Each structure stands twice: as C-alpha cells, then as structure tokens.
Length: 139
Image (cartoon, rainbow, N blue to C red; front, side, top):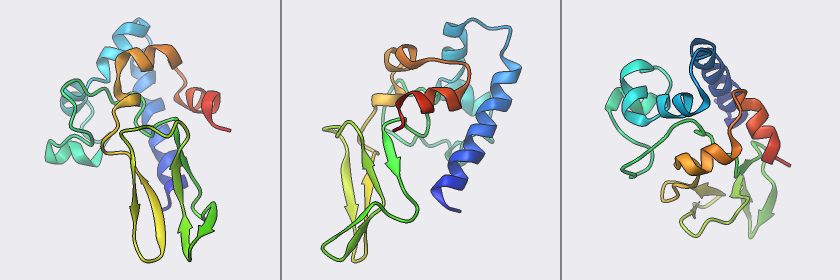
C-alpha cells in the first residue's frame, strides 16, 4: 500500500469516528482520541492497537493528528540525493525527527517526535474535518 493510499484510508476511518462524536464538544472530541480510549473504543483505527503498542513513546499520546500534518511524502520521490531517492521529510525540521537511510532511499523517521500528538498542538489546528486540518498546513 502506498502512503497516499494509506493517508486516504486513514482519513476515511477518522471521518467515520467523527460522525459518531457530533454530540461532543471540541475538547471532548480531542480527549476521545487519547491513546488509552482509542485502544478500547476504536481498535481498528491503528494496526498497533492490536499489539497494545504506541507509535511514539509518549506518556500522553493523542491520536487525533495521526498522519502528522508536518510530514511531507511523495510516493514517487521528491528528488535524488547521492543515488538515493528522498521519499519523505519533515516540514518543520523537528529536532526530534531523523532520517532512515538505506542503499536506495531516504525516509523521514518521526518516531522520536511528539509534536502532532500534543493536545495543545491539536487544539491550535483543530477542525472536525481531519482532511481540512491537513489541507491547512499542506503545501
């Protein structure tokens, strides 16, 4: 599955959850997306939930902005760097991010970054339409 396909599929999962939460306030919606709650109430939202694992080692992990709005990807690659194809980057060049580099490719490694999983960050970008949130920050 390409990242673009995953992104579209993930957005549809997000939309389905949001349809169930219309009666909640914005703060309650954000709270609903806390890892512990999602693990119980939305076990199919993330494949890691089945393993009871977090994608980031954060005590307070919020999954509302899974698929970080600062993550830039191109399934065909952005450019070639020393015979390797750059497929993904961080738009804010997070100090906690890194790159995974192999013989042929360069990918952004976001596992050390918690920026989009902070409820303060989520509140600054919050919109009940996840795709609209992503369009606010994507180029």
